[in-house]
Image (tube, rainbow, N blue to C red; front, side, top):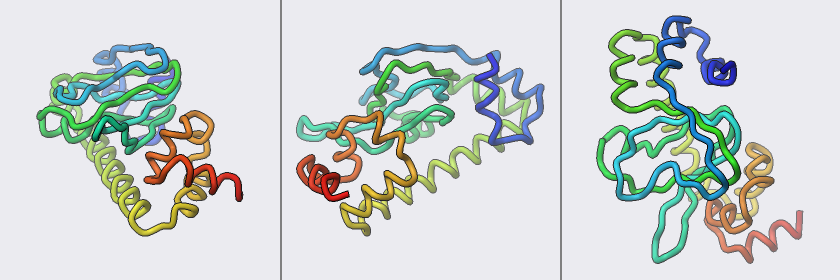
Length: 187
Protein backbone atom coordinates (compact mmCIF):
# COMPACT_ATOMS: atom_id res chain seq x y z
CA UNK A 1 0.00 0.00 0.00
CA UNK A 2 2.93 2.38 0.48
CA UNK A 3 3.05 2.95 -3.28
CA UNK A 4 -0.30 4.77 -3.25
CA UNK A 5 0.92 7.24 -0.66
CA UNK A 6 3.82 7.93 -3.02
CA UNK A 7 1.29 9.77 -5.19
CA UNK A 8 1.21 12.47 -2.53
CA UNK A 9 4.98 12.88 -2.21
CA UNK A 10 4.90 15.87 -4.54
CA UNK A 11 2.18 17.44 -2.36
CA UNK A 12 3.54 17.32 1.22
CA UNK A 13 0.94 19.74 2.57
CA UNK A 14 -1.84 17.13 2.41
CA UNK A 15 -2.90 15.97 5.86
CA UNK A 16 -2.64 12.31 6.83
CA UNK A 17 -6.41 12.29 7.38
CA UNK A 18 -6.98 13.44 3.79
CA UNK A 19 -4.49 10.87 2.46
CA UNK A 20 -6.20 8.12 4.38
CA UNK A 21 -9.68 9.18 3.23
CA UNK A 22 -8.46 9.34 -0.36
CA UNK A 23 -6.84 5.92 -0.18
CA UNK A 24 -10.08 4.37 1.12
CA UNK A 25 -11.83 5.49 -2.07
CA UNK A 26 -9.26 3.94 -4.41
CA UNK A 27 -9.60 0.73 -6.27
CA UNK A 28 -6.82 -0.99 -8.17
CA UNK A 29 -6.53 -2.43 -11.64
CA UNK A 30 -3.86 -4.44 -13.38
CA UNK A 31 -4.07 -4.36 -17.15
CA UNK A 32 -2.04 -6.28 -19.70
CA UNK A 33 -0.34 -4.52 -22.62
CA UNK A 34 -2.97 -2.99 -24.90
CA UNK A 35 -5.61 -2.78 -22.15
CA UNK A 36 -7.92 0.23 -22.37
CA UNK A 37 -8.44 2.53 -19.37
CA UNK A 38 -10.67 5.02 -21.17
CA UNK A 39 -12.48 4.81 -24.47
CA UNK A 40 -13.47 7.45 -26.98
CA UNK A 41 -17.20 8.22 -26.90
CA UNK A 42 -17.66 7.39 -23.20
CA UNK A 43 -17.66 9.75 -20.24
CA UNK A 44 -14.47 9.40 -18.21
CA UNK A 45 -15.38 8.62 -14.61
CA UNK A 46 -11.95 8.07 -13.06
CA UNK A 47 -8.75 9.83 -12.18
CA UNK A 48 -5.86 7.35 -12.39
CA UNK A 49 -2.45 7.12 -10.79
CA UNK A 50 0.11 4.81 -12.39
CA UNK A 51 1.76 2.66 -9.75
CA UNK A 52 3.72 0.52 -12.22
CA UNK A 53 3.82 0.61 -16.00
CA UNK A 54 2.96 3.16 -18.64
CA UNK A 55 0.10 4.43 -20.78
CA UNK A 56 -0.57 6.61 -23.74
CA UNK A 57 -3.48 8.84 -24.69
CA UNK A 58 -4.47 8.88 -28.33
CA UNK A 59 -7.15 9.96 -30.77
CA UNK A 60 -8.22 8.12 -33.87
CA UNK A 61 -8.49 10.02 -37.14
CA UNK A 62 -8.99 8.38 -40.52
CA UNK A 63 -8.22 4.99 -38.94
CA UNK A 64 -4.86 6.23 -37.61
CA UNK A 65 -3.84 6.54 -33.97
CA UNK A 66 -2.51 9.96 -33.05
CA UNK A 67 -0.64 9.79 -29.74
CA UNK A 68 -0.98 12.98 -27.71
CA UNK A 69 0.65 12.05 -24.42
CA UNK A 70 2.47 9.41 -22.46
CA UNK A 71 2.19 8.71 -18.73
CA UNK A 72 4.64 6.78 -16.57
CA UNK A 73 4.90 5.52 -12.98
CA UNK A 74 4.17 8.19 -10.42
CA UNK A 75 1.94 10.24 -12.70
CA UNK A 76 -1.77 11.01 -12.66
CA UNK A 77 -3.77 10.65 -15.84
CA UNK A 78 -7.30 10.85 -17.10
CA UNK A 79 -9.21 11.93 -20.19
CA UNK A 80 -9.22 15.43 -18.74
CA UNK A 81 -11.77 17.10 -21.01
CA UNK A 82 -14.30 14.35 -20.38
CA UNK A 83 -13.48 14.01 -16.67
CA UNK A 84 -14.03 17.72 -16.01
CA UNK A 85 -16.86 18.48 -18.46
CA UNK A 86 -18.71 15.17 -17.94
CA UNK A 87 -19.05 14.85 -21.73
CA UNK A 88 -18.01 11.85 -23.86
CA UNK A 89 -14.28 11.57 -24.35
CA UNK A 90 -12.47 12.32 -27.59
CA UNK A 91 -9.52 10.21 -26.53
CA UNK A 92 -8.54 6.67 -25.65
CA UNK A 93 -6.10 5.72 -22.92
CA UNK A 94 -4.21 2.48 -23.49
CA UNK A 95 -1.53 0.82 -21.37
CA UNK A 96 1.73 0.13 -23.21
CA UNK A 97 2.85 -2.74 -20.97
CA UNK A 98 1.49 -4.62 -18.00
CA UNK A 99 0.36 -1.73 -15.79
CA UNK A 100 -0.97 -1.33 -12.26
CA UNK A 101 -3.10 1.73 -11.55
CA UNK A 102 -5.01 3.14 -8.61
CA UNK A 103 -8.17 4.98 -9.55
CA UNK A 104 -10.79 7.12 -7.88
CA UNK A 105 -14.30 7.86 -9.12
CA UNK A 106 -15.26 11.40 -10.05
CA UNK A 107 -18.14 11.46 -7.55
CA UNK A 108 -15.94 10.15 -4.74
CA UNK A 109 -13.37 12.84 -5.46
CA UNK A 110 -16.00 15.59 -5.24
CA UNK A 111 -17.22 14.27 -1.87
CA UNK A 112 -13.66 14.22 -0.56
CA UNK A 113 -13.20 17.85 -1.63
CA UNK A 114 -16.09 18.87 0.62
CA UNK A 115 -14.35 17.39 3.68
CA UNK A 116 -10.69 17.87 2.81
CA UNK A 117 -9.89 21.24 1.26
CA UNK A 118 -6.22 20.31 1.01
CA UNK A 119 -7.22 17.62 -1.52
CA UNK A 120 -9.16 20.19 -3.51
CA UNK A 121 -6.09 22.43 -3.60
CA UNK A 122 -3.95 19.48 -4.70
CA UNK A 123 -6.41 18.70 -7.49
CA UNK A 124 -6.13 22.30 -8.66
CA UNK A 125 -2.33 21.90 -8.74
CA UNK A 126 -2.70 18.70 -10.81
CA UNK A 127 -4.96 20.57 -13.24
CA UNK A 128 -2.44 23.40 -13.48
CA UNK A 129 0.35 20.90 -14.17
CA UNK A 130 -1.82 19.28 -16.86
CA UNK A 131 -2.45 22.67 -18.50
CA UNK A 132 1.24 23.61 -18.50
CA UNK A 133 2.16 20.24 -20.03
CA UNK A 134 -0.51 20.69 -22.70
CA UNK A 135 0.72 24.17 -23.56
CA UNK A 136 4.34 22.97 -23.71
CA UNK A 137 3.29 20.15 -26.05
CA UNK A 138 1.52 22.63 -28.32
CA UNK A 139 4.61 24.84 -28.50
CA UNK A 140 6.81 21.75 -28.83
CA UNK A 141 5.02 20.53 -31.97
CA UNK A 142 4.43 23.90 -33.61
CA UNK A 143 7.76 25.67 -33.21
CA UNK A 144 10.51 23.07 -32.96
CA UNK A 145 12.10 21.08 -35.74
CA UNK A 146 11.52 17.32 -35.92
CA UNK A 147 15.10 16.72 -34.75
CA UNK A 148 14.72 19.10 -31.79
CA UNK A 149 11.44 17.45 -30.76
CA UNK A 150 13.17 14.06 -30.68
CA UNK A 151 16.18 15.43 -28.79
CA UNK A 152 13.86 17.03 -26.22
CA UNK A 153 12.04 13.72 -25.77
CA UNK A 154 15.39 11.96 -25.28
CA UNK A 155 16.45 14.52 -22.69
CA UNK A 156 13.25 15.04 -20.71
CA UNK A 157 11.35 11.74 -21.09
CA UNK A 158 13.91 9.05 -22.06
CA UNK A 159 11.82 6.22 -20.59
CA UNK A 160 9.20 6.83 -23.28
CA UNK A 161 11.73 5.97 -25.96
CA UNK A 162 12.37 2.65 -24.19
CA UNK A 163 8.69 1.79 -23.71
CA UNK A 164 6.71 3.14 -26.66
CA UNK A 165 6.74 1.76 -30.17
CA UNK A 166 8.45 3.69 -32.97
CA UNK A 167 5.04 4.40 -34.49
CA UNK A 168 3.68 5.80 -31.21
CA UNK A 169 6.75 8.00 -30.76
CA UNK A 170 6.57 9.27 -34.35
CA UNK A 171 2.88 10.06 -33.93
CA UNK A 172 3.53 11.88 -30.65
CA UNK A 173 6.33 13.90 -32.25
CA UNK A 174 4.12 14.69 -35.25
CA UNK A 175 6.35 13.08 -37.85
CA UNK A 176 6.42 10.01 -40.05
CA UNK A 177 8.17 6.81 -38.99
CA UNK A 178 10.62 7.35 -41.84
CA UNK A 179 11.53 10.83 -40.60
CA UNK A 180 12.00 9.50 -37.07
CA UNK A 181 14.21 6.69 -38.38
CA UNK A 182 16.39 9.18 -40.30
CA UNK A 183 16.75 11.37 -37.20
CA UNK A 184 17.63 8.40 -35.00
CA UNK A 185 20.23 7.21 -37.50
CA UNK A 186 22.02 10.57 -37.36
CA UNK A 187 22.15 10.79 -33.55
